[in-house]
Length: 430
View (cartoon, rainbow, N blue to C red):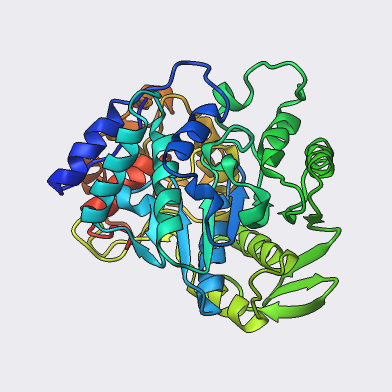
């Protein structure tokens, strides 16, 4: 499976075609290729503004969104790299608050692809090299960098202590088993502990590492990784506490305060916001006031994560929710959010994912279940998901078949499907 990228801009598309032809030999692990590529580009990763580096199975993208919003509320300009993109590849590189423009992107990708033509880099390695190259060229006060896959061997893990302000680990869960649970000597055998071990590979000497609270086996792996690296650990329940009621109450050794609840839907977003706060409070490179934290919590936006679609060409005026979640933790979150609320579910899932992870937590609420393809990828057919599931060739036909009975509609199962939905509804991220 290859990542999905296309553009209406001919010069960008020419470079995306080159990206699409890249492949990675099965089983290649390590940071050697990205290090060589960055060295050829002048090692831009060593000349970045202060970086906030975020790993995790679920919630790392939302945590990055809160970090960006809080830093910008303080008046800082912020570079961001996230993955995957939803509608346009440009979403992966945000320069001082704005998505990279097409002309600049075409030149940037051409430069990086030319530099690494003989190295056989991956799609993601080229993307990260391109992001870091422009992050080093364009002035900004901070960078927010989301880990792509795992942490220890992720291309973003070339970041060195000199440029890092803080690292963070969001919620953990079992995902990408083929890569993150591959047999290897000297690593934990318990799946949850192994996932924690991989994520905690981003810990660096002298760089604060903020994390949530986890099952004991996972917590022990994160504590051990922090100790090995010499990273000061700031863990929820130990160094900081966050509780929710009518407000988000946050407390650490430096003080306590009440903040508004996040504007992003879902109770889990308060947890992601609190991790962003913990990361900002653990570092002393870029001061951020409680007032800016409060503004950022209310202003953060993160598309396709329990997003209610605006009225548009696809959604019309129906209540339609969109979520790109595709694993058991995402299923539990959706089950909690919609508990007791009958809904129509439209599901599209990659064939490497487990449909039961989403369908089972939502089963008591499902009034109808439609299955659609995931554009550009191999996907689960209806008969592999549930006996009552009906297949439709695309999202347009699936929505047209749902009765106008006033029940909400949830479209879920894949960020690639979510991108297609946003494109069709005219809601491409900006």
